[in-house]
Image (cartoon, rainbow, N blue to C red; front, side, top):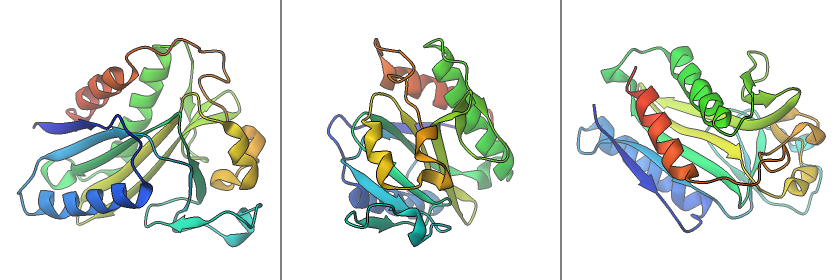
Length: 203
């Protein structure tokens, strides 16, 4: 089953990206377009998932974009890779837990290529290195089409996390590849593309 892969070199505004995703969900549902993996970065954007609370906004000057994905308040900013997905589980196993595990395994596999040993945590969704979170996952399912996706902190400015309680966590518990000492990050988009297309073909 072939999946279209899009890589955006310029930063894509959050609302525009979500609009494209939602249109793609409808097209995939009608069989008009292929499934999608979209690799991109956003400008500085704070978003609130369906279980977010106002008390998680520490800096009241910032604007929160409400979103339909699962999860709480989070940050997107330059240097953080976003992997958006539109995957039709009607054509695969209708197993959301397995789908999320494949996303977790894909991020762990990617980080291992840069000598970072990461793990998933059942209680706190996302990917962790020791006791710090390096990647977040937020998925929405509509008629068995899974969309939204995951974010991985590469070399983004972590100070912006001080403005929020990210994913319900202490904002000191967030890390990035750069924070962990990885300076040379070559062919990242290509590695993401190869790992995610390979692993998503298993379901």
